[in-house]
Amino acid sequence: MDYLEAGANIIITASYQATIQGFESKGFSKEQSENLLTKSVEIALEAREMFLKEHLEKSTPIQHPVLVAASLGSYGAYLADGSEYSGDYGEAGTKEFLKDFHRRRLQVLAEAGPDLIAFETIPNKLEAEAYVELLEECNINIPAWFSFNSKDGVHIVSGDSLIECTTIADKCAKVGAVGINCTPPRFIHGLILSIRKVSLVSTTLCTVFTACLAPPSVMDDCSTYPCGVHIPWSPFLVYLGTNHCVGDGEGCCYVFTWITFVALPQVTDKPILIYPNSGERYDGEKKEWVESTGVSDGDFVSYVNEWCKDGAVLIGGCCRTTPNTIRAIHRTLNKSPNKQQLPAVE
Image 1: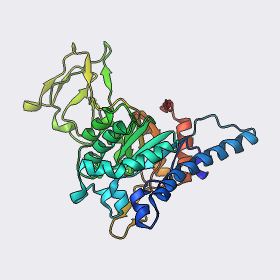
Image 2 (image 1 turned 45 degrees about the vertical axis):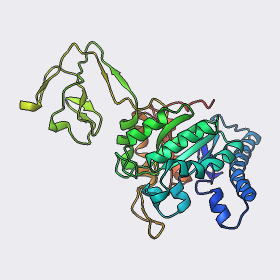
Image 3 (image 1 turned 135 degrees about the vertical axis):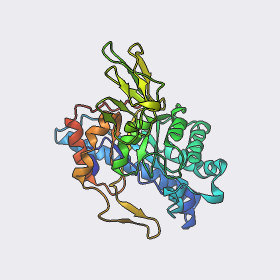
Image 4 (image 1 turned 180 degrees about the vertical axis):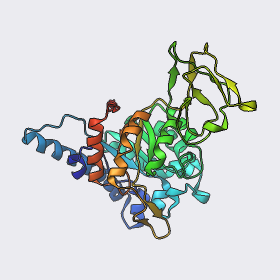
């Protein structure tokens, strides 16, 4: 309820690490285990109804949508050995094994009636592929989102390319949004730009080129320069606003005025969601977060306008964020000139 009062549009069920296999290992029957999964969705649905009813009785009806997402964590989250932050499943790392592990859990959560299915903290490409096949095989008709966690701002934690993983989600019609969670805030800007599908069409006053390698002076993490704009970690400078040569010698490239279109990375045009963690470091051996290694709520929300401008549609908080974080995000988004409308759930 605290998160709803803070302004959350979406609340996520407490089922991230809840699995039939995990409950059975603690002595629960299969039926009891499935009932516990169902209960996780029912609790969130009840919280929403209480929240909406209370505000209606106070004559302060809530105008924004409030959705419930059923959380489905990775196989590594079930293992609780830190492998959700490495993606290394050893001998269990086969697609068929992962599909068998998640199948009934996904069906039970979907049957409980959430608005969304959240495949969270996906640590490797193989598990993303397994999820896509399960959505089709189980004929899940509830919109899903895929969110990956990154270790360095380029790759997901297994070392797989975020771009490749996003492409897997993008090709699945049952996936309604894709993005990043449980990742330090400082990495989010570059990650959004690396997966967002955009096209830049120049006006008669703009000049662009697509085939020339950029000189070393633009090959770093900065996204803007006096002479142009590029995607971080890309070898191509993608937009220039004036006619001139860039670089010299082998790095020299002339900007042609007659080229009027440039395509940026074609990865996904699905809504992008991001809900980073606090930036604190997780100690997998001690199974605890290392305090004083993250950012404050104020520092966290200082990124929000930039993320909106980058193209993020859904913004929230993951591990070690609090209702105060969500409240600060909500206030910032309400004032942001770059905020986008929450996509409709069909």
